[in-house]
Image (cartoon, rainbow, N blue to C red):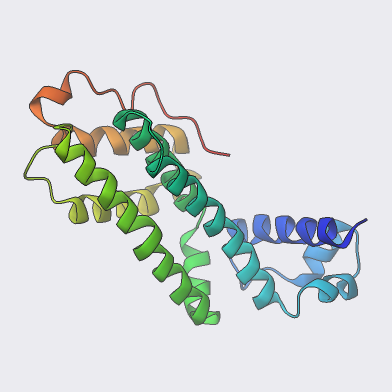
Amino acid sequence: MAEREERERIMEKARERFLHYGFAKVTLDEIASDLGMSKKTLYKHFASKEDLLREAIRSITRSLSERIENAVSSEMPFEAKARKILTDIGTTLGTFSRHLQADIQRYVPDLWDEIEEFRRQQILDKLDRMFRQGIRENIFRRDLNPEIFTLVFIGAVQAIINPTVLSNRSFSATEAFSAILGILFEGALSDGARQSVHMFDPPLPTSS
């Protein structure tokens, strides 16, 4: 197996475990066992569990950043653009469980600082641009505060679309995400757009 492919396999399995179990409860022994390889092979690619976590999280943020930027810079109509961006952000943020976030803050604080910087520069700023475009095009009310709306959206997604909450509820992540958009946009849309914009109907598919 080529080294690059082997490294990707390790990172993919680690990412899966970290997102599901958090950081503290995952061991390199478990990851190696899942992959049918030795810990020595893991250490050939990653110096420590912390380094493996960093690379796993960075792969997620890089992918999300590219998808957001492609959508923001595209010529898509506003509704399609907003749908794409909010779906990608919502489904990605929903994979980060609260215990993973708490573990990163506690055990790998420098990585948490990176995540916060990514949130400010790649999520908040780009969503702000998108909402301001919507205001200019009379999709959103003129008095909408894009910064507040963005923070409310992210807070709702992180509070509801996570494995801990969903495991105890009858609704799926897709249904929850669609409902969040429906509730938020009902108050944000202009009177003229409310009858014609269908950003959250039918339920949004999850992003790959």
